[in-house]
Image (cartoon, rainbow, N blue to C red; front, side):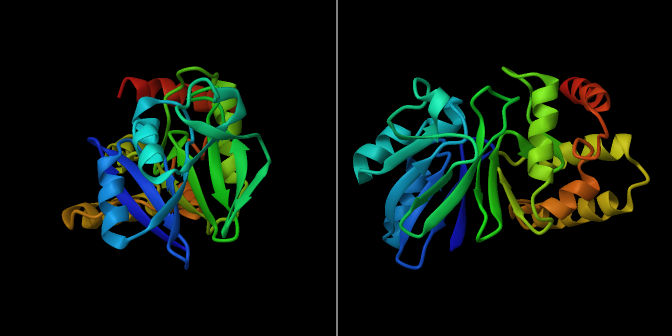
Length: 238
């Protein structure tokens, strides 16, 4: 499998997962045009649209892509009314499998009540939407601190070499918050240097690895929901 990173809108990422037969899934198409441009250039068969949650900057391209390529839209069962064009309703812990694509659905509420991730366990990839960012986590809009803390711990329990593909390029700003509250963390200091090098070359800071996030991401390092909640409140005003 090949993962192509597609910058969308101001700071969103959509992702194209392409198999050896040139069939593909797109994760969270914020807008259609950048996806269409890549699909047409590489002559890819866009078979599936996978949505982590219902926010517009993750589903904005659904209907145009579905209409153009007759793609199948996959999303969480409880968000059927909020995800445009949805065809396949998935639930927590289900393994979604079609063609050469196989992913476990992990329900990770907090940012929204219906947020899910797609864990392509054979390839050790996870698409975390707006729940886990590199060096950060999503704002809590519809869920609770407890839910978000538990959702992050679900991701944290995966193999350490799992690659993390998140919904936004927030890593640099997130790093400033992490280093302020964890200034002696040498792993974090080294990661910040890596981030700077990538951004100097206009490269994405994504993917990260779960190992890096456990070592460097202050939200994953929180020991309990109380300390996590304090950090989340501080980040909201950072």
